[in-house]
Structure formats: C-alpha cells, structure tokens
Image (cartoon, rainbow, N blue to C red; front, top):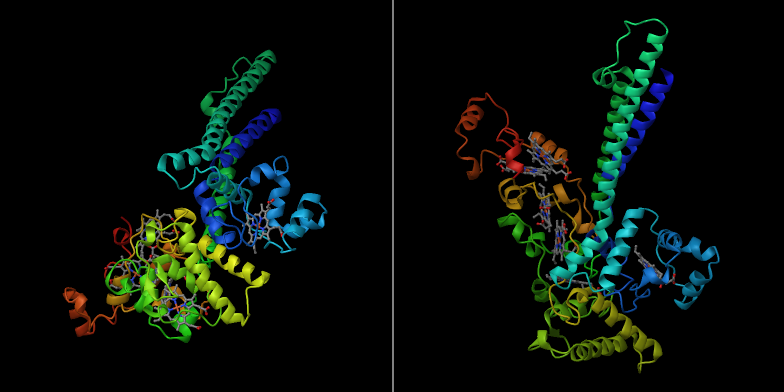
Length: 470
Ligand code: HEC
Ligand code: HEC
Ligand code: HEC
Ligand code: HEC
Ligand code: HEC
Ligand code: HEC
C-alpha cells in the first residue's frame, strides 16, 4: 500500500511540475524591444551598429558565445564580473574609459533572453524592416516555446497514463496477494476507485492550492511592476519644468483629454510653438532641444523649415545640425575653437540625437518622436478620458498623481480593475448641476424628496461589466 501511494504521488508531482513549466513566461523579441528601450537605449545605440556611451551591441551573442552565463551576470551586475578579473571584461571596461554600466539585478533570465533576442533581430535585420522578415524573427525566437510546450504536454500526459497503469498493476498484485492468502472474495480495484482514492484527491487539492498561490503572487507582482513604471524617454522632457515651473496647463498639450477617449501625446509641432523661440535650454544647452528640430526638419540657424527634408541625404542633415550644435557648443562653453574635446562633444550630441530619433527610420532623421508609452490598459477594457475629465470633472492628478512634480513621468495608479471599481463605489457624481445626467429622473426625484443623499458612479451603472469591457 505504501509503495503504491509513493509511486502515484511522485509521478503526479512530476506531471504537476511539468505543467507549471508549460505555463511559465517565455522569451520574445517584442518584450525585448520594450525592455531595451526602457533600460539600455540611453547608452546603447538602437541601431546596434554605432557606438554611443556604450559599445554597439550587434553581434553580442557571437562575442560572448560559450560564455552565456557570464553575459547574463554582466548585464545583472557588471562590476562583479569586472572584479572577478575576467580578461575580456576588464579589457572592455578599460577601453570604455572605465564607464560603469548600470546594474540590472531585477531582470529575469527570460527578460535578458528577450533583450538579447531583440539585439540579434535588429543586428540580423529581421526586426522592424518588412513584415515578413519581422515575422521570421519572431518565429525563430518563439519556436522553442511551442516546441517545449508540446514536449512538456506530451510528457505530462504520458506520465499521468503511466501513473494510472502502475496504480492498476499495484492494485491487481494486491488483489492477487489477497486471493493467494485465501480471501477469494477480495474485489479488484477499478480505475474509478484509484481516481477517487484518498491519496489522489489529497494530491489534486494540494496541487490546486499551490497553483492558485503561484498565480496570485505572480499577478500581484505584475501589478506592482506596472505601477511606478518609469521608462526613460528619448528626449529629456520634464513635466516639472513645463507643467510645474512654467505652469503650462495639462490640456494645452494633452488636449484630447477633454473631448475624446484618448488624452493624446502632443506632436513635435506643439513643442515648436514655444521652442521656435526657446532654442537653447538652461539645463542641456542644445543637446535635447535639437532633437525636436531634427524631428520636424527645422533649421534653427536660419529659423526656417527645411524643404524636402524627408528626401535629404543623411550627410546634409548631419551638416545642418552639427553646425548648430557646434556653434552653440562654442557659445555655451566659451571655447575659442573646436578642440579635440569639443569635437567629441559635438559628435556625442549628434549620436545621441540620431539614436533617439532614427533607429527605426534609418537613415532618415525626420518623423515623430517615439515616446515610450507608460499607461496601457489591456485591449478588453474600455476607458474614456472625456467621460472622466469633462463629465466626471475629475482632476488629472486623481489618477496620475503629481505629474507637475515629475522629471520623468511614472505610472502612479495600479490600473487594476479594483482601482476603477473602488473609485466608482466611493465617488459621488456631481449630479445636480450637470446636464449630462438630466435623463436620470428617478434619482433627481429621490434627491429632491430627501429619500436619497447622494448618487455614486456605481448607482448610475459604473460597476456593470459591459460598461468597462468590450
Ligand atoms: C549608463 C550607461 C549604460 C546602460 C544604461 C547600459 N549599458 Fe551596457 N555598457 C555600457 C558601457 C559603458 C559598456 C562598456 C563596458 C564598460 O565600460 O563597463 C557596456 C557594455 C555592455 C555589454 C558588453 C559589450 C561587449 O561588446 O561585449 C553588454 C552585453 C551590455 N553593455 C548590455 C547592456 C544591456 C542589455 C543593457 C540594458 C539592460 C545595458 N547594457 C545598459 C553602458 C551602459
Ligand atoms: C508641454 C507639453 C505638456 C504638458 C504641459 C503636459 N504634458 Fe504630459 N506629456 C507630454 C509629453 C511630450 C509626454 C510623453 C513623454 C513623457 O512621458 O514624459 C507626456 C506624458 C504624460 C503622461 C504619460 C503618458 C503615457 O505614456 O502613459 C501623463 C499621465 C501625462 N503626461 C499627464 C500630464 C498632466 C497631468 C499634466 C499637467 C499637470 C501634463 N501631462 C502636462 C507633454 C506635456
Ligand atoms: C508653452 C511653451 C512650451 C511648450 C509647448 C514646450 N516647451 Fe519645452 N520648455 C519651455 C520652457 C519655458 C522651458 C525652460 C527653458 C529653460 O530652462 O531654459 C522648456 C524647456 C524644455 C527642455 C529643457 C531644455 C534645457 O536644456 O533646459 C526640453 C528638453 C523641452 N523643453 C522639450 C519640450 C518638448 C519635447 C515639448 C513638446 C512635447 C516642449 N518642450 C513643449 C516651454 C515650452
Ligand atoms: C479616472 C482616471 C483618470 C483621469 C482623471 C485622467 N486619466 Fe489619463 N489615463 C487614465 C488611464 C486609465 C489611462 C490608460 C488608458 C489606456 O491605456 O487606454 C490614462 C492614460 C493617459 C495618457 C496616455 C495616453 C492615452 O490617452 O492613453 C495621458 C497622456 C493621460 N492619461 C493624461 C491625462 C491628463 C492630462 C488628464 C487630465 C486632463 C488625465 N489623463 C486624467 C486615467 C485617468
Ligand atoms: C478617481 C476616480 C475614478 C477612477 C479611478 C476611475 N473612474 Fe470611471 N468614473 C469616475 C466618475 C466620477 C465617473 C462619472 C462620470 C460619468 O457620469 O460618466 C466615471 C464613469 C465611468 C464610466 C461611465 C459609467 C457610466 O455608467 O456611464 C466608465 C465606463 C468608467 N468610468 C470606466 C473606468 C475605468 C475602466 C476605470 C479604470 C481603468 C475607471 N473608470 C477609473 C471616476 C473614476
Ligand atoms: C470600472 C470598470 C470595470 C468594471 C465595471 C469591470 N471591470 Fe473587469 N477589468 C477592468 C480593468 C481595468 C481590468 C484590467 C485589470 C488589469 O489589467 O490588471 C479588468 C480585468 C478583468 C478581467 C481579466 C482579469 C484580469 O485581472 O486582468 C476579467 C475576467 C474581468 N475584468 C471581468 C469583469 C466582470 C465579470 C465584471 C462585472 C462583474 C467586470 N470585469 C467589471 C475594469 C472593470
């Protein structure tokens, strides 16, 4: 009896472990792209072939081939790899003027794998480009996922079958033993009896609890991750400077919030309303603002929009902006001539500029600024800004926090379903003086007769599933 239980539970444990494997996250180029943008792009060029603050990462898999584990450690904690005295690492560090890379201790193996897959995809030209090539890249990297899932599933089913068969055999042997011992009436155990035996039921309950706990914790972590999400942006645009110090109204830039579903990120033309005049900043000099000019094709030296900008050769564009940067770099630093350091500074600024705007459009410069999106509800949720801002008369800060104090925007709320529902339960709608609610006659009467003190968003249907879900 003891043996039988032991065999069944250990086999079932294996089945359970394998299913857990199947459901775990996997490597993908798309998430690698997001992670790269958020963590690495400020130092490593997104085209993977030019140097920036750090070396071009194209071909990184070949450079570290056979030493993948060390590469992962390098990305998590560069300093410790250099300290270990690894000659390649020490050499690299010295070549790059001992600039230390940020440590990324929180990146998981899958996340680093995704970043590396993205780097390879860009390097091999299978990312972005044409759709077929991009699909190819994804297919290449995601192949192991489908394969493993299949293998694990088949294994899991096989093991479950073996567990059953063994249980059956053990049961039969048990039965024969009893018959041999003279108990000819002893019943043969049926499959059903095995499936409903105490040990199997106990195991299933145990497995469900563990699996439930695992997913709950996982979800809690993923909520936590999205909240406070604060990616670097391609331009050092500061809400503290604009909405805080200079008191520019949120809706001057996000004018969608009042009248539509989306708040909308302003286009570079909105920036130009002011930055045609403010061409040099007090913090970064020419470095950051030139990116706006290069995005829309504005020549700040002559104060004109460049004709046929999108058909211009890269060298000509480069000449225009390098001149602007160089002229002002001299003015900024009161340098008489471009010394070696000055030339390097101009080059650095240019590289930084190209990195934040082109990458995807190489070799073109123009095109919209590619801001990194921060808030992002899943597709099955419907959220409408004007409903909240214009009808509900809520302040932006109730959902987004003190954006006017943020240098770099971060996600203030969890954006979980509970967050929406809680506010809908608690918030009283400004009912009386709002034309939008004219049709709710019953509530108006109840309010007038004193039968009802207040109307919450929940009362007008704000917790009905179909209001928020497509
Ligand atoms: C603050 C700037 C900075 C950031 C951010 C940064 N790196 Fe680096 N990285 C460097 C520098 C500088 C080097 C060159 C070695 C040195 O000086 O430490 C380097 C080297 C590397 C190398 C080795 C290159 C080679 O040729 O072998 C890899 C791999 C790498 N970085 C990956 C990453 C990844 C992945 C990220 C994002 C998760 C990242 N880096 C973020 C600055 C940075
Ligand atoms: C001068 C224009 C400007 C003003 C004024 C401004 N913003 Fe923004 N806002 C931007 C730009 C550009 C971005 C995209 C870059 C970024 O995230 O910093 C942005 C991003 C955001 C985001 C994140 C969007 C995302 O990706 O999820 C929020 C939230 C936001 N703004 C809220 C506000 C609030 C609230 C105010 C007023 C206190 C405000 N903004 C004022 C230009 C502006
Ligand atoms: C309503 C006017 C206005 C608009 C619109 C505006 N800015 Fe500004 N911006 C300013 C002012 C004022 C400053 C402060 C200048 C200073 O510090 O010297 C500034 C500073 C900056 C700086 C810092 C420059 C430095 O080196 O100190 C950046 C970067 C910048 N803006 C980017 C943008 C971007 C990107 C947009 C469009 C999304 C934008 N601005 C829209 C008025 C504006
Ligand atoms: C009731 C809460 C709430 C209020 C009030 C609110 N927002 Fe949002 N905001 C959100 C949510 C939720 C998202 C994510 C929407 C999505 O992913 O579809 C968002 C997204 C954004 C974005 C990213 C672009 C977009 O539209 O998806 C910007 C910019 C933004 N909000 C600015 C503002 C500004 C400016 C105000 C004030 C005028 C404001 N928000 C008021 C909840 C709110
Ligand atoms: C800070 C409080 C607050 C938060 C957070 C909030 N809402 Fe609302 N919501 C309101 C208010 C107030 C109204 C009432 C405006 C109105 O009458 O439509 C409203 C109305 C709505 C409506 C229209 C309801 C109806 O019956 O007409 C929808 C849909 C909605 N919200 C979706 C969402 C979603 C989705 C989220 C989360 C992503 C969310 N809300 C988060 C306060 C909030
Ligand atoms: C006020 C808006 C709102 C209402 C009402 C609402 N939901 Fe949601 N729901 C959300 C948001 C926002 C999310 C996304 C949460 C996230 O991404 O974590 C969500 C996610 C979900 C999910 C996916 C699981 C998850 O956590 O991502 C399910 C299932 C769901 N809702 C079912 C329902 C059902 C059933 C109802 C009606 C009883 C309902 N919702 C009512 C806003 C709402």
